[in-house]
Structures are given as C-alpha cells and as structure tokens.
Length: 142
Length: 142
DNA sequence: ATCTACTTGCAAATGATTCGCATTTGCGTA
DNA sequence: TACGCAAATGCGAATCATTTGCAAGTAGAT
Image 1: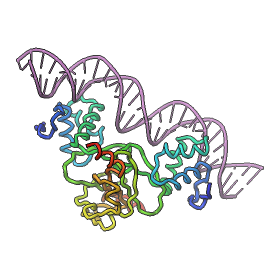
Image 2: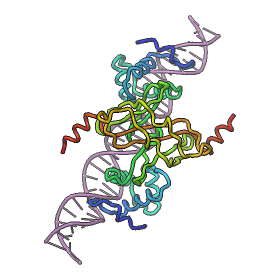
Image 3: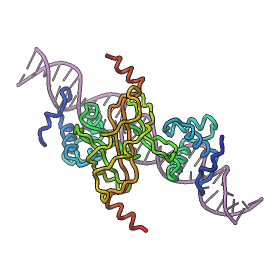
Image 4: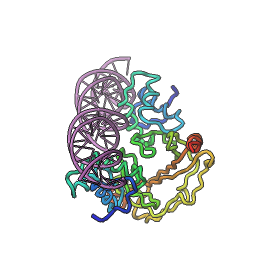
C-alpha cells in the first residue's frame, strides 16, 4: 500500500484499516457504497468489519476527506474522495452505471433567490438517463 | 375532499386512501416524507396504515403522478406532486428547510458528454447552505 | 516504555421501507 | 343491480443499510 500519511489531518490516527479504506477510494473510478468498500478492503485483510468501515467513512466525511452522496433515489449512500475539484455525474437509470460530467452547469448560474435569503455553501447536480449500452438494449425492444 | 378523479390514470383505482394521499401532496408546500404524509392522512382518517401509504406512493411514482427524491444525504425519501413543471430546491443544512428555486441552471447547459454516450432523460439540481434564519444564528455564534 | 484517548471487534439495536397473506373493495360485465 | 375478479388494504413480520454499546486493542504524545 502506498504511503498515505500526508493526507491524514492531524489528530486522526493512521491505522491499517483507515489506510486501506483511503486507498480503495483513491483507486475507485466512481463513488462506492460502504458494502463495496468493505468488500474491497476485506480482499486484502479479512479482519475488517463493516461497522468499522462505516465509522471510518463517517470520520473521513467529517474531516472533509471524503464526500458522501446518494445516487438517484436509492437509499444507499456512496462515498468518494474529496478531490477538491467539483464533480457531477450522469447515472444510468437501468444499470446504475455512473459517468462523470466534466463541466458544471452551475458555473454560470445565477439563481433567482436573494442572497440574503439563502447562504449558498454548495450544490449537487445529477443527470439521469440511459448509458450507451442500456439505451441500445432498450431501443431494440421495439 | 375535492374531486381528484380527473388526475388518476386509467387502470388505477380511486380509493379513499389514494385520494387522501393525493390531496395531501396537492396541498403541500414542499416535498414530504412518507411518515409525514402518513400522519397528515391519518388526521382525517385513522384507518390508514403506513405500509399502505408507501404502496400508494410507489404506485403514484410509477404512474408518473409523483416524484420521489432524496434531500441532501438523508436516508429518507421525499415525495412531491409531479407538476410537469421543472423544480429544484435549496436545502438548509441546519434546519432542513426546503426553498424552491424558480429558475433552472440546466436550461442553458450543454454537457460535454457525447449524446451518443448517454441518453439524457432528466436531471436534478440541489443547492445547499443556510437559510436566512439559520445563517443569522450561525454567524451570531462568533 | 508508559499512559490515555482514540479505534476496533463484535453483536445487537434502529429506522426506513418492503413483503406476505388473508380480507376487502372498486369497477367492468352480465 | 348483482356478480366476479383483479387490485388494494390491514396488519404484522421481515429486510437492509446504517448506527450504537461496550470491552479490548493500539497509535502516538510524553
């Protein structure tokens, strides 16, 4: 495992599980659910527990290291590294594949909501539809 | 209760609970959770059951009558009438108040994602931050 | 090396949502 | 109007992601 020491904020201990979770997220191509992260970590070390993974993720989220999101209307949360670089996704409503959007529609957006009425901290954008493969399958049905 | 017959698609039965759920959503100022809807319906008719409300909402969602969303990273789903008119919200991260945005940033947005790669059906935008009241409270803390 | 607060192992609890099944009801048809 | 049947509901129990409690283990400051 590579040395992730540098990214851990002072005050949070660098344990092997935390390093593993971090490394899994670092190598993930898209946001992962806690159970997915758990199983990937466990591939390298069978001693982890799911609740530990949840606790580590909570910790990372509150340290700002990790972002927690929900995709579509699923009740499951997904986690991704906070790369300090704005990201949004397109989600396939059929296979749930997640595709990254490289530009953000909010950049030039001026909401018609008085700034005195709402102090904006951030935003989230999500597009949904069919990915290439599923679109092909669906349209071949008729 | 007013006559909601006209809005029910053919093939779905107009029962009293369905009418009540519909009417609650019709009068709601913002998306409601299933338990909230349940309790409002029960105010008028104690015989409803929470699982029935869930089933009615599922039915309405698959008929396109109702939209199901999640707010922030909450694990609870919210439901609102599909008013055939694009809506997005700003959500207060402190009190969870939901404020409607009257314009949509996606209108002029051209994503840098090949149309052949993704068949866009819709999108979701969410802004988060502090509402006026909470912003006042928070900033008075220091 | 020691101490202490932070972490984890493990199991049991929680909370939203779904499911199973017997009973009831809406509504097309006779 | 009465009948029949598929759809809807009552009710409780099950499910699944996530959280919590507590005892035991460990990182890292001194």
